[in-house]
Amino acid sequence: MPTYDYVCESCGHAFEKFQSITAKPAKKCPECGKMKLNRLIGSGAGVIFKGTGFYETDYRSDSYKQAQKGESTASSSSSDTKKSDSSESKTKSDSTTTKKESPGGDKKKKTA
Image 1 (cartoon, rainbow, N blue to C red):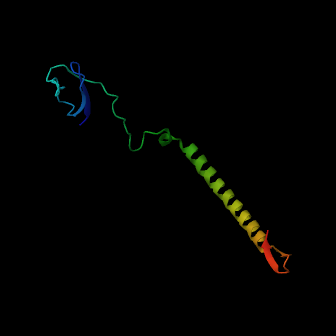
Image 2 (cartoon, rainbow, N blue to C red):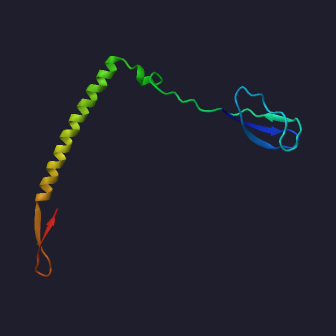
Image 3 (cartoon, helix red, strand yellow):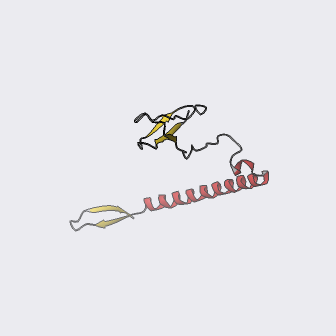
């Protein structure tokens, strides 16, 4: 059930009323009691489409879907090789340490 906005032409009282769509508009102002009440036209409610068939991607051709599937498979395999390359370089940099003498004569290990 929708909420309707009303305003009285006589006293200027404005309010909202929750009523059925099939109900007749109210005519009598609850403040002044005069029959000068007008129902205002609202902007309405947003419509929500749920389910399949409402998006352009629901109607893609089979050739497009196959090309996208092939493209996503290729990109995931290339990202796997990038991950393995970066993990190898990280392991190499972690294993290389340099020894530097501090001013006090202590030897400390530092990583690059």
